[in-house]
Each structure stands twice: as structure tokens, then as C-alpha cells.
Picture: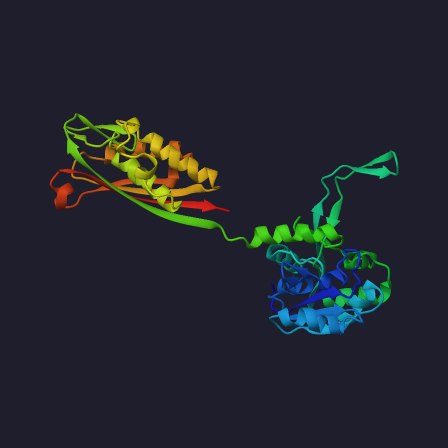
Length: 380
């Protein structure tokens, strides 16, 4: 937003159609008055002017003022919206002004910026959303189909060069639907910029519920969980090892109750850990004969299913295999693809890599393979 911009918030209406016993701009939305939420959206303005009703001063001081985190000039409005806008414009000191409905508390930074930037190109701009529903004219029966191709739903803030809209209001009088209408009547070109469906005007009682849902979606913090997995299997007789679901030729095999897939075991435990669901041993006990020689891809599939059941998606998996031999590099892509298929995620969310232990420890002596895994789960 340019440094010299006035935000003029029009809040003088009676607003009882939305219920609640007080004007809707003073009702709480998720614990904060609508008007306070609206003013907070214009933190980048050089000045804020709030126009309130003649009998609303006490209501403003009691409900709104404690929630404001910046200074604002509070002006008394008139009986008509145009009177209130003129009262605010009379006190505006910036060369540009954004005039906004107090009961549009969900206006986005993007919409505000689009209107402000349009004032570099012309004297007036307003956001709008194209009409997408079919339009009919008629009462009990359809009398006419209305062409919607050039129709838009008007929103605020509507932006103007201050001297231009001030002069237009002085000559227009009352009764205009909004300030863009005043500008058009004065022959001022008004650029249309993209609006936002969430920039609703709270009018009816149900609009508070809709605004609360939008606000909840906007402010919700994703639930992100991390889990670590570690597993070890020693070498024994055999002609291959199974790693991440891939048979890798080797002069020995890995020993375990199942297929001893140390890589998938580590990843599976990482997901169980992120879910706080224990480890493989809890779900597939090693003393249960049902799992003798079992394909470890089934273990990982089970862990992935638990994550899905709880509403999580696997954000990414990072697996490190530690061994001197066999060489992992030639098989890493196939291993990555196998894990990604089981988890139902893109391969670019799965990392399989290998390292040696510089001939130190049991892996350095070629006695077995170790695996370390980290899994990240996310739920909106």
C-alpha cells in the first residue's frame, strides 16, 4: 500500500437485520467485534478514519476501542451512507482513500493491494466478483433470462483519489448504493479489479456462521507431526537382501522374523512414532507365527492406513541405510518408487540414501545393516 493512503471504514449503520441486539458491526466474530477485525485489515494505511452513528459512541468505546492496536480518528456520521462518507472524507488528509464497509471483516491483503495499485493507473478502482449463477427476472414464474456475461458483484474497499471522490460526493447527494456509483454518476472511470468470494458483507444472521468458517480456515494452524524410526538386522545365510521392498543381490541375507526389510521397518516405525502408535512390535508381534517371513510392505501399508484414518497425509519421508555392502545407489530409485507407491505420495517426497560407518562398529565389520528414518505427517 502506498505510504499516503487513508482507510475510511464506514460503520454508522443500524445493522439490526443480522440480529444480536446490537448493530452487526459491534457483534463478536470469533471473540472480537466485527468492526475491530475490519480495522485491523488496514494496518498498512497511513491513517484510519472510522465513521460511526451519532448514538454509537458509548458502544464503540466499550466494545471496539479496547481491541484496536493503532490510533484511529472516530467521526460521527449522518442519517444516510453518503452523509457518513462525506463526514469521513472531510477529515481525510491523504491523497488517496480506500472506502470500506465495516461489515466486510475478511477482506484480504491481496484485494486491498489490488485496489491501491490500480490508483496508480487511474482515479478510481473497485473490487468485484463475476456473477456465475444463472440470472432470471420474474416473480412466481421466469419472465426473462438475464445475460450475466458482463455482470459483477461489487465489493469494497473502493479506492479513489481523495479530491476526486470528495468533489463527486459534494455534487451527487444521497441515495447511492456505494461510492463507485457516485463516481460513475460524476463521469469518473472506475477500474474493476479482482475481488474475493470470502470478502462477504455480513447482512443476515447466517452470515456470521459463514464468516466464522472462513475465518477458521484462514487462521487454522496445520497439525504437523514428526516421527523417527530405527532398525537393525544382522546378516545370515542367503543370496540377497530385501531393502525397501527391493531384492538386492548379495552373498548373504538378513535375518529376521519377517522378511527383515530393515529400510521399511525404519520408515514404518517413523510413521507409527509420529502417530504415537508405538512400533512394529506392537502391531505385528515377532512371536506371532502369522508374521513369519511376512512381506514388510504390508507393515508400511498398515502404518500409512492409520495415518489416513486419522486425517493425516505423509508430507515426506527421509531414510538412510547404513552398511558397507551391498551398494545401495544402483537401487535407490526403485526403492524410492516402492515406498512412494505404498504411501500414495509423489516420489519427490521420499528420500532414500546410504552411507557407510567408515568400517566402524557392526556395520563397518559387515555384520549387518542399520536404518534411520524420519517421517513428517500433516493434517489441515
